[in-house]
Each structure stands twice: as structure tokens, then as C-alpha cells.
Image (cartoon, rainbow, N blue to C red; front, side):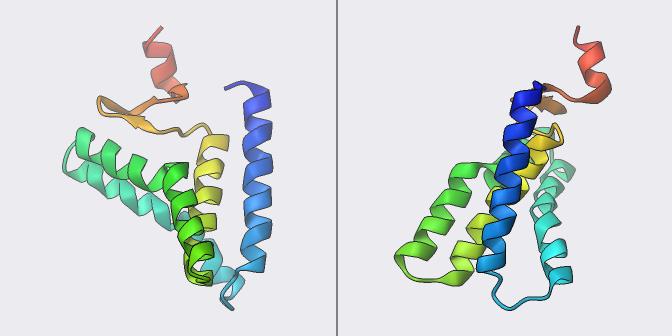
Length: 124
């Protein structure tokens, strides 16, 4: 992945985490660390099939979903929805920073960012 895109994702992740400190709901830091990685539960869809796994992963990791949830929180003055939206946004940016993108239905390693890891070599 291009360095400039990684830098952008680092910045988005850092800013999102900053905003999470403003909407922390009074939870301790250790709980936020667990919650930060909780969207990866969506990978359980891969136990059913690659297509279902890609769908569930993409649904939870899509930034538009995060923005909709945060917007609902702002509209209805719900800090919980704001925090969930920010958390999903931060997690999605973190994943993209690490090279994990939205998935295609053929293979977990086939993402909108290209092929991940060794699969990149096989696809050449």
C-alpha cells in the first residue's frame, strides 16, 4: 500500500481515538481496548462461507455505517451512538492502516486495497 495512504489512515485512527476520549461513556481504558477490536467478531461469517464472511466483515468495517451511527447519535443527542460510530470508524481506519481492506467474496486476502501478504505474490 502506498505510504501516503498509510499516513492518512494513521491520522484518521489517531483523530478518531482522540474523539473517543471525549465520548468515552465513563468506561475504563481496558474496556475500550477490548471494544476497539470487537468489530473483528464480524469475521465469524467466514465460518459459514467466504461470501457471507465478506458481507459481514464489510458491513461492520464500512465507514459509511460508522458515519451513519455517529450521525444518529448527534441527531438524537446519544453519546452511546456517537461513541459506537467513532469506534467503528477508528477500527476501520486502523485495519486499513494495517493493510486490511474491505473484502471480496472470493478470498479473505483479496481486498479493495489489493491482495494481502503472500497472496499478493501468488496473484502476480
